[in-house]
Length: 146
Image (cartoon, rainbow, N blue to C red):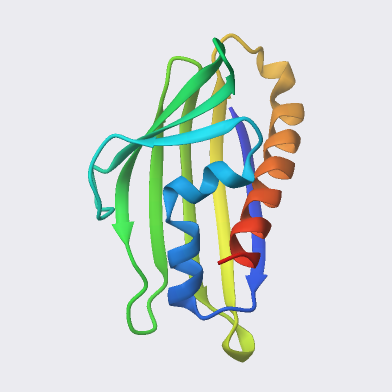
């Protein structure tokens, strides 16, 4: 398994940061050659499912995910969402946490455990570095746009 952690401090309130990070279809606009198909109707809750389809034409793969923890930020409590990846190619989980930071800013923590079936464990460090770069750009883009 490739494990990685991303940390960011957003110049946004906690609620707005949460909203931007959990609008699943918007993630497609930040990852090249990816689109998001919602399987369940809004609003997001435990059991919400969606598929990230990455590829061009018939060359690609589906990354189906399900929300298993949905705890929006409330009062001074941090928000936490956990996604479980249930694909034939990509498996693992991701957690996104938002919490109040200094000066009205928000701290973002993205933790992920990722495995690509058929990819030997020897490539886990490379996979983690690539995922950290891709998802880091994704978070930066989501937090910088409305």
